[in-house]
Amino acid sequence: MNATAADRRPIQRSAVEFRVLDDLSSVAVDPATGEAHALTAVATAVFERCDGTLTEAEIVAEVADIFDAPRDRVARDVADFLDDLAARGLIDR
Amino acid sequence: MDVATRRFETKTSRRTVVRTGVKLAYGVPLVAASFKLTGEGALASDNVCSCVADSYSPKVHNGRCYSCKTPGSGCNTTRGSAQVVDLIPASIGGETCRCNSNTCVVNGRAYAKGAIIADGVCHPEDVTCGGSQPSF
Image (cartoon, rainbow over all chains, first blue to last red; front, top):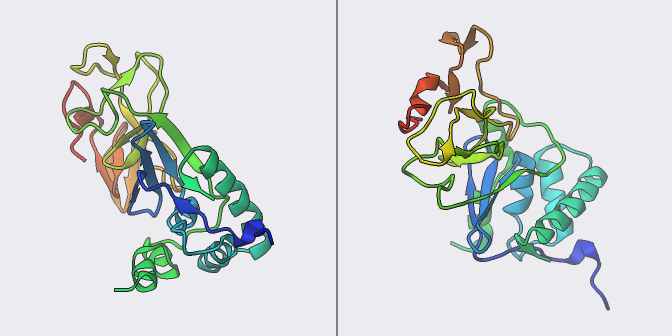
């Protein structure tokens, strides 16, 4: 049986350096490409949960809870954002 | 310490969101800026007040994201080909921090035009110029 997108457990690429700032935004640096990416606070909350243990659905639930946001909206946003992170080579899905 | 415990101690949570002082509102998660680090890289510790001419690419200093001012309108650094540039804190995480009027007031204190606010503190803009190391 194929896992749905919500069942996938995204995980940060091990080489990526990740630093959370005081305002909860963050910077992720990929030494392999020499690229740095500045993440917003909500993006940070998503990215730091990409540890291979949480499913996408669980990430959505936690982020929706933290920011008191509608879960369906967060689900759409997180799916798009994870696609973006994967395209940038920051995570594996 | 098990993984779950560590996760909740270190990741963004309701508690950390509130601890920022202002409850952060939800916004579409996104990469606010991406940029290539070079030999004169933004993460270099010796001088980060440098932008390649005509580049508006964001730079990182002390983990914060800045964009370059209009080339030619700032000051020169000691780096050869690198032109100018004051650091303008870019919009990141909803934080803005530049005094654009003649004076600005932050937390009850007035600062001169051009001051840069970092970590809640204003710094004279000229500390980023003339090749000197930004002090914040």
